[in-house]
Image (cartoon, rainbow, N blue to C red; front, side, top):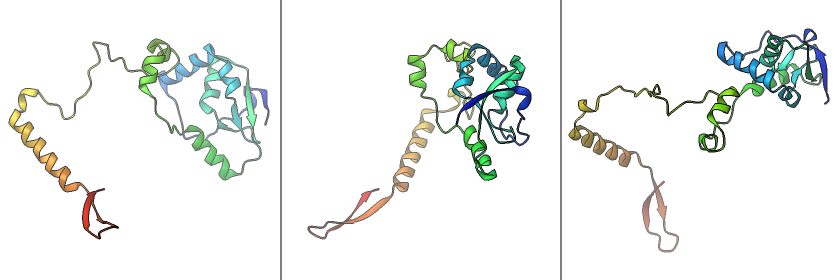
Length: 178
């Protein structure tokens, strides 16, 4: 499949697109496209034979907002209706998670933020994680903590699964932790 450049007016947004980007995140996408338009070459908008977007609805909307007159598309007229629906979902599902250690050690937080990533600022004085349930440490005694720790330890021992095993040499039966 080969990409082609077309006028944005030729492309139809998918009215059944289940994924949206709102407000600040949409502004970040527009900014990202303006600052790094090569991304659109690497990841063109995918359309079907009727020029309806299958992948890249928000990118198309951001391109229009950014004033682009043309964009690269990848036309896939070989997909069944079912395959098109499947592609729309799978193209938008985020299977992975960020490896925060790599991000913290290999990237600058300011750059990640500029590139559109929502990066928590743990050094900020305004960073105040919500503890649930909210508690004041003065509300809990050491005795209560010890009692709860013992209760949890006992519960863990009860919940531990045992497996019946028979020794192949001597035939002795015993249990081991699963």
